[in-house]
Image 1 (cartoon, rainbow over the protein chains, first blue to last red):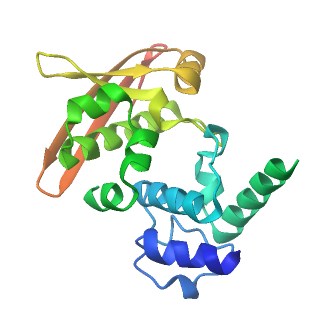
Image 2: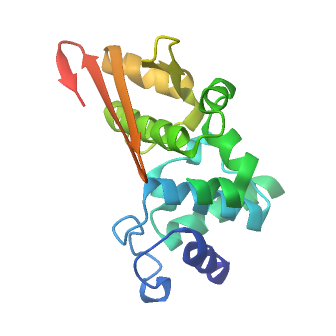
Image 3: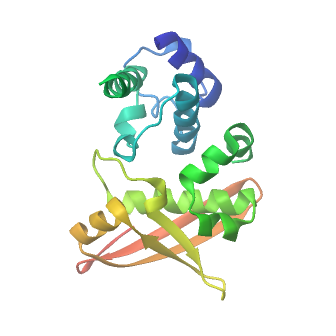
Length: 82
Length: 113
């Protein structure tokens, strides 16, 4: 999952740095991801993982790091499986 | 904006913009970008802390005379009420590759931007 998240960030976050240089807990917004780019990341994640982020998850903290994204996806998968 | 629409197309548009906003923008990436900027600016005024606010709960409504207003619903409206925001003013601009927006709210006797 982490590799796929990193690939999505590489393709959609429009970062000025290589995503491979970022730790899982690195702040993506501080690394240069804009709010608009985070929307592209969100949509790409939804496509890739066949899910939809509910409004309650449309907040900065969900997309602020690779680790945060992974946790959100895990939560959504668990909810879907329940 | 053009890239976002090109890659994600209707999913992007329908997730971010209301039907009225899409009609007002008539496909113009500049207008879409300006409205996105307005939604972002409104969020910064509302200061939702760490909670999600749907993009469409902040709507930019165009008056036939040319100005725009903000219409809030759902969680955005609730946040405005909690903050005592009595009125909002919004201004959009776009030129070339840039779009921006300013949102000002009257907050219970003090101003927030």
